[in-house]
Image (cartoon, rainbow, N blue to C red):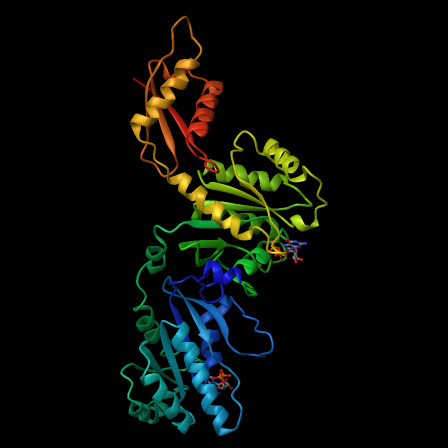
Length: 452
Ligand code: GDP
Ligand code: GDP
């Protein structure tokens, strides 16, 4: 219902909208899984658990010469009866065509061409996506000669490989990754608001994402090196496009001596760096922890917008002023920068979760706010007139004019005869006046004093 109202647009499970995705299709036993595993090597990254289906498809992230792309192994069990065969193939190919940017159609040189290969080729030839015919199990030169029969399937791009030994796979991957535009993901996301969903383990990040997306999502990562520490998902809500950046559900399999907490903080920082606005999720029963405050002040220091979402509000016994008092206490702990929206939500009961996003979008707008110079001077000079900077060494400290700098984070330069003599309390006064007169809620603002 809500999903309908807000018209959520979603992309395949946790995948970035524009990420390059390669699907592997082919009849059973041609070597799809073998090739899939070779592509991923130790990087076997993402497993989708689809309830009721033992092995529908697998997702993974591959890396070839520094280019990352998603791989889908459509594997699939294919039952025996001819009719079901056809439907299953159609289904498998449909998945590939829908979700993939390119298709690897795998056939088997050891068995030679079959009717099923023919049937799949028929469907794939009609696809608008680029199709690479991959003739597998070409383990020796003899096989290579036999394998040439597959040219008759009529595909332009034909590669002979051995998934087991890896021979021929390099040329294939060069060609496939040649289709990936540099930074296409980055370009696509340019200019869209980016929200990081950050919080301690178990505060409800996954639950919130699932509630927003409207479907279960399980992403398991046991990546040895570094690949993705964050997942970007593009949404449309309130007629606005934006990107959610999360680290929920990515659980790095720790080596014996590694500290899981450490990595969760590192990931939070990465997510923050990539975002414009940070949605900091707290557990209502636990309140704000020391680590939350560290992340909070880090976000402020980095000039990110902030919204605090107090989750699991359904578990809190409420009296008349519970929320107000809770908010007051939080703001005390968050000081000095506490002009930040605080919302009480429940991911479980889906209360105010969309409000959370709406407020995030407002904060995003506040962060972009540019105050016209005339208006800025008009209001701020009056505020300065009614409360002057303290006199230092008998000299009146004057502020002549103010200008907003063309920076991403709202920054203001106050031009003064003695800029070094203006101290923190007065700076705080100016910041409060800016906040009173212009809406910078959720946004850290910067104030500089310059010589005039
Ligand atoms: P899938 O059903 O298409 O996923 O096929 P699998 O990856 O499970 O492979 C089917 C069989 O073919 C397995 O016994 C593999 O070991 C074997 N196989 C895969 N690739 C090669 C290859 O390049 N050469 C040879 N000789 N066997 C292979
Ligand atoms: P994550 O580790 O931050 O991703 O947290 P999860 O989403 O896995 O949630 C941790 C636990 O809190 C799960 O048992 C959830 O069912 C529960 N939970 C999440 N949100 C809420 C909520 O709003 N209310 C209640 N009562 N439980 C919640």
